[in-house]
Length: 142
Ligand SMILES: [Ca+2]
Ligand SMILES: [Ca+2]
Image (tube, rainbow, N blue to C red; front, side, top):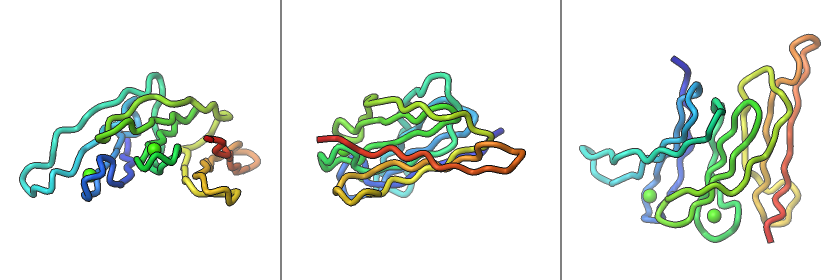
């Protein structure tokens, strides 16, 4: 059994925080909408990220349409999943990554100050010598 990674945000814009999560050995992202009912946690909707074990998930509005999008990061690539409305996700882009010796971590922040969220992924590049690296993808969405 692997570990879980999750990100929280209001994906369907109903005012309640929802969850996107993955078990790190699996190849899909589960999205669970917050129903607001204590005894009804909602049914997960599963999105495949083909041939990729996941290590990190983060959410942010990548295309500035007001909907939170999802970034799923694995060992060899990051998948951008666009929120097309009501929290439904569709593939937007695959970003290739350098080979990693570790679980990757990811954050979405506006790194260059242009108002768009950029993606930074931290990883262990080599074990001997111990060398860490950060891959940065600047968001050029119009
Ligand atoms: Ca919600
Ligand atoms: Ca969006």
